[in-house]
Image (cartoon, rainbow, N blue to C red; front, side, top):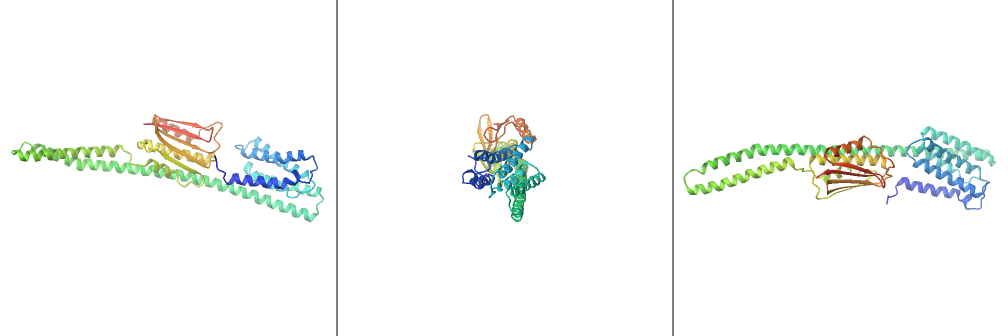
Length: 367
């Protein structure tokens, strides 16, 4: 179950505030100037239209129409009550939500229209000039402050996402650079072992082989034993050189955890089975896959948690990643996902995507 974040909690608090300011007209003794049922429908329409306009992806005519309907419905609720009370809070809410739907300048237009409607309502209710000016000015300032606060919050969230994405990219580059340095060091050590110790032991073996044919049975026994030891040492050196060239000394689990370590807006869990064995090229592909998955989750999924598992099962090594975000209805892969697919296909594997319950990526490389 997805945990509620600050955005969800703020929405719930705002809903509670809205019900509170409308309670006298919904449930209390104050009757609107239209039938209570119609007024309740208008009141509910404000929040339904606001919610639909916010959860839609992108800015399109339907989104603007939904938001416009919410604004007009909020005006209608004010125009159909015998006194305002705290009901102008609805205008503050529409101003705060406007920044999620349209540009900042359009939000100021909404605030101007809200203020005009509020002044008209106060005039119709025969409020004194002083009281009307104070009320209109107060709600005007509250609308501006709320909208600018929302704009600042959105900007801060965008910057945090960009910083988190740069953090993931930097971590992945650091892991791959470290692995490249370790590989170069392994090759250097293997060459040194072969050139220095291997050649010396070969010479020793040849010398002892020639000594076998000298006179003296006792000397022959010592020479035979030395010859066997020298040959064993040579075999051990060659085996060590071979292992240094082919084995990956990197800790895959540690490398993947380092890529997604300490992301401010995403909790990532990484599990790597002990049976997983990969070479250097496969390890690099898995690191790049985790980098791309984490970046996409931060950028598009609106998720709180991401689970990554690397397991050893037929037909090879399988990376499974799933988040608790919104998933997708129709996936249009970008350059990152296409590059991820091409990288695994080049290794003889493949990648599958699923967006029914969060966003799931399953990547496979052959054993």
